[in-house]
Length: 215
Ligand code: 3PG
Image (cartoon, rainbow, N blue to C red; front, side):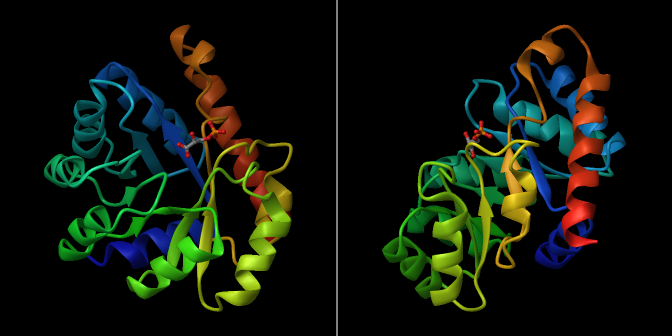
């Protein structure tokens, strides 16, 4: 399968990537199912808990409608571990070429984080045309994205960090934005209470906001 094409197709319809941070694979799977029910099928499991790789593997194995990737991938070793667990894409907070190379060797989409023109240029020279923009709200938000987009023609950005339903439309209005990422779709308190309907509702709301901006 050409992962990039499939992910790009899905993001064209629903340009939002929810983050899952979970301690328990069952919770991760239920959260992923709730997101898919709400219309968001490209899901990032962040490697910020000891069970994160197990959570990723569980989603990859039991939520066939989801395209699940790994986020917060900091090292080459972590990149190799998430490949084995079934990650279909890799996201990093920063740009670290060994992680990029692991993904490229496996022909997997990789979205390293950039926050400056120099980092975007380095990513461009590594052959990347889609990157994460992180931390979006602190690194200059929409005006910075517009500035980067005007210089790096053909490059698309996935802003993440400080995005919510309140500012999602502003980010999606920028043509170089591939999709927005964020944790606002998976609130810890609701998930701790087993309130997965809230997760589905937040996903549905995000899809509706995206439709108003992108049709
Ligand atoms: C990330 O991993 O991309 C960020 O931590 C997400 O930021 P948010 O919690 O503000 O959405």
